[in-house]
Length: 269
Image 1 (tube, rainbow, N blue to C red):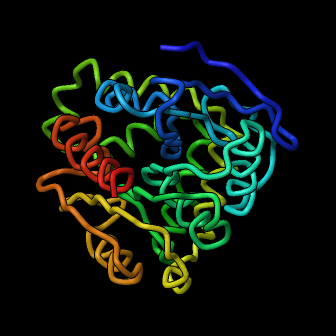
Image 2 (cartoon, rainbow, N blue to C red):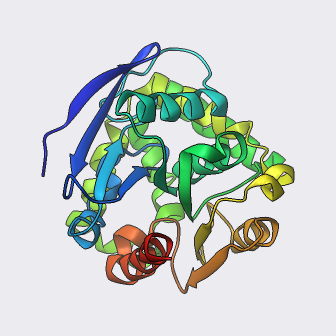
């Protein structure tokens, strides 16, 4: 794999990496809050034979700058468009999980000319009041005690009980990224998620869209996944049984098959 690098986009330096053949169709992969581009490590081997993959750490995450203050979803969208502009990418296939899927929705609504397709995985289109309270509590905890106790309060949302209890190398790989997240980045990013309100604009998305959801996901409940599917005309939906928020880590073969099939369909027509 290529090494991580950085590029100046607006007011921050964004970390990124390329994988796959230089002449392949370009896909951009955006991760979840509290993670980094490494969340897609389980997918790259299944895609890099055909696709030119651009992974990046969004604002506040991984090796990207984490300025103080509240971030907005508009900033995440602007950063993404700036990244595409910097590499001369007129249009790409967008793959986003959780927060990365929120960014994808923002692009589909506000910058449809920049995306050939959207793959929206385990994501939300609206933050309910109780979720905002949950975010407030997580922010209070991280300010008081750092990222480790936040992980302990989060891992069962992301993984099934059996996977979390087994705590294998894959589990610890995600944990390591999470607990290394810069506190200003986590607070700024979760503040953006707290203001998520795309639900009533999803009908504006005309980009071909593939949606992947998990039946048991407590972080992105399946009824929210169904609602996204219903509001994006012509979208396809696949539901993975008995999984939580990160089936791409816990059951990568099943997830990769669904993701790859959707991307191939978009590219081959």
